Amino acid sequence: MSSFSVTEPSNRSKWIAGALVIGYALITMIPLVWILLTGFKSPADAISYPPKVVFEPTLEGYVNLFTTRTRQTQEFLDANPPQNWADEIVRQYDMVIVGPSKFGERFMNSVIIGFGSTFLSIFLGTLAAYAFSRFKVPLKDDLLFFILSTRMMPPVAVAIPIFLMFRNLGLSDTHLGMILLYTGVNISLAVWLLKGFIDEIPREYEEAALIDGYTRFQAFYKVVLPQAATGIASTAIFCLIFAWNEYAFAVLLTSANAQTAPPFIPTIIGIGGLDWPAVAAGATIFLIPVMIFTILMRKHLLRGITFGAVRK
Image 1: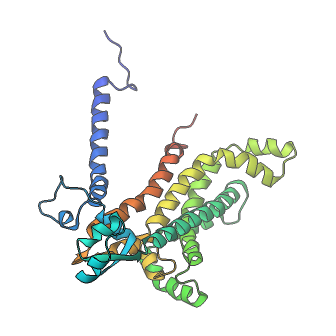
Image 2 (image 1 turned 90 degrees about the vertical axis):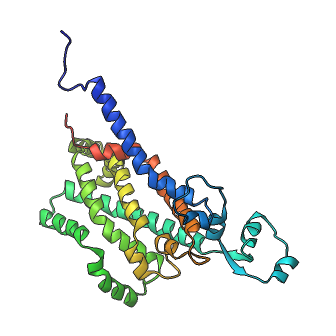
């Protein structure tokens, strides 16, 4: 009689689970792959029906994304031959490249605001979480609930007050204003997540450091922070994803100087309407920083999600 374990799954169960995971992964990857492929289509292929899976690839979408073009007369085109391969692409529409587009600036705004607000949220959230975890704070539970309640509030409910406040303070359409706003939204998530991680770190580690002559700050910096690195990394990913993808406040509070990529990409206009290959190219490039950051932190993310689920 073969042995049977209630905790160890059978080979058949493993195969079924693996097939389901692979199938789910492939299904979820379809939209991303389609966006990637659309970036290499021509405008006609991008809107063709039925949709084209096999097509002749072109870099027209990326050229339109990064350049500004204008239509010229045939005499001008004949007198000024194409200077490079990008010029040759736009010449088929009797157009010439007159300069770079604003996508690079909008992308850098996203980098500055997204990573800046994430760093500030993690910095302030770690200090606040440590205080709530280690010290006797009056009305601790009430304060924690108040902090969490700010995350429950829909952005549209405070859009007009924030708009008026930013206008009076001179923070509208500024990097500082958007960093402070996203930090205010993310800090509640950071405090709650990081407090859970710090609660799991034994106090005895800090007490031993204090006995050895460390100050409270040194014990926090050299003992608690390394132990909480997993939680900090996973929290940073969630904060960055929100700040990177946020659309409503970016539309309302920015227009030129601090406008990020999400409100800019849908406004890319081509011949006869939206330039879908350029939009897809912009979306593809926009995904890369978050994907790289998440991949680099994936071990911490998986550990952070399951942290505290199993206790020894």
